Amino acid sequence: MKDVYILGIESSCDETSCSIVKNGREVLSNVINSQIAIHEQFGGVVPEIASRNHIQNISKVVEKALEDAKIGFQDIDAVACTYGPGLVGALLVGVSYAKALSYSLHKPLIGTNHIHGHIAANYISHPDLKPPFLCLVISGGHTHLVHIKDYTEFEILGKTRDDAIGEAFDKVARVIGLGYPGGPKVDKLAREGQPNIELPKTHFDNLDFSFSGIKTAVINLHHKNPDVNKADLCASFEKTVTDILVEHALTAAKGLNIKTIALAGGVSANSYIRNEFLKLEKQGYQIYYPEPVLCTDNAGMIASAGYYNYLNGQIADLNLNAIPNLPIQAIS
Ligand code: KG4
Ligand code: ZN
Image (tube, rainbow, N blue to C red):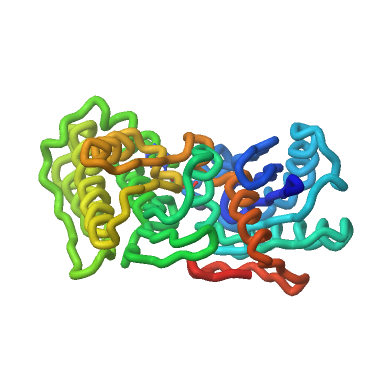
């Protein structure tokens, strides 16, 4: 079969990114312009500022991606862009740019779901990984336990009923004064502490998650006792949320008789979570997670997911719009 080159664009939150991916798995370039330093002073992403920066950055990021991949616009087979979920103003920049590119180059346009992208990051890091498998998508905006039945067929087995796990990491970090984004900072400090503080776990009669209770418990504990050891608090928080993730993943894996579990999304860069899942290999499970740069938002994962949409004939037209709350199953 002829090689397929997808140009992917990601702009759903605070990263402007463009990537060229060959045959869904081989990254020729992945340019990521992160706005973290700009939003840090506000303690979180400011949507209007994010949109404005995407507009300023996108042309340069796309040009650099082509340059790094040593190819030209004409070598591309299709243009894939994230059209949801995410911040509407931020998404619109990538969607509009991708539409203009697709129209002017006479190349197909592929709308890509950001969550499918996070899952597909594993295809790049692990050329041997094929569906079916289970994937825990754990990021700043999402916490989903998904059954990947096929490259473009997804079933949600459980999701958060309140905060996303990354939101909880970020909030805990902010309250104890670690700054934004908190996940990597909690990860680092937790390595110096012991998980010796009891924190609440919320259970439902299905595989849904809830992280608002534990987040509030950490905040209350810190306010009542500002001298509490921060490293122990981080270690205890990490252990409690990880126990829940492992429990839910194992219940789903046993129920479906699936032995392959992948992690995806920004929080899957967490070293404790990775190690706890790796321990399951002793029980015969195969554990996958993307390399750190592919865990957080990037266009490589969007081009990879876009490739499988392309093979499946899921081509969008110029009516493609940004959908901030796009559900996981949605196809363009
Ligand atoms: O996937 P992502 O870049 O954005 C969304 O699609 O939401 O994820 C960002 C989230 C943030 O909440 C950040 O704190 C968290 O991922 N994160 C981590 C780590 N690295 C990033 N959380 C825990 N441990 C880490 N090492
Ligand atoms: Zn993301």
